Image 1 (cartoon, rainbow, N blue to C red):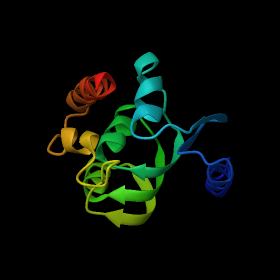
Image 2 (cartoon, rainbow, N blue to C red):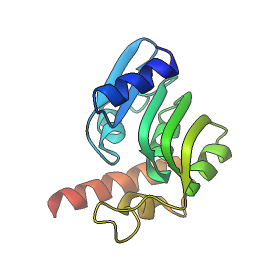
Image 3 (tube, rainbow, N blue to C red):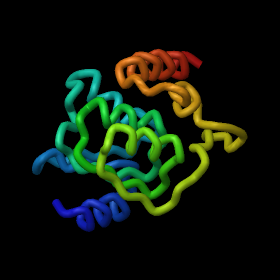
Length: 140
């Protein structure tokens, strides 16, 4: 699918994320890193060569997609740290709005996933830290 078709489908179906994996369309209505990290638990390269359209991309999501060998990312909202890491790894991307950081769901601070990887550049280290953080948050 073309980028514009993915964007239309994302908005019409009220999705949080849509990815074209060389003709295989993956969609999710989950929020946070779930739409990315969950399929990566089964296949680390799940998003290899994919075009991903996401409502919100922070550094955590960006690092997971880079690790999964994504080809292109379009974000409606992109954090400055996500932009830095995408540039560092030379990933092709576009966005609508750049924000200092992704806010948490209670809107009183930084997203816990973004905070977890804030100073990291190693993708595998970030993946392990995010898996741990996801488990920690599930238990709460």
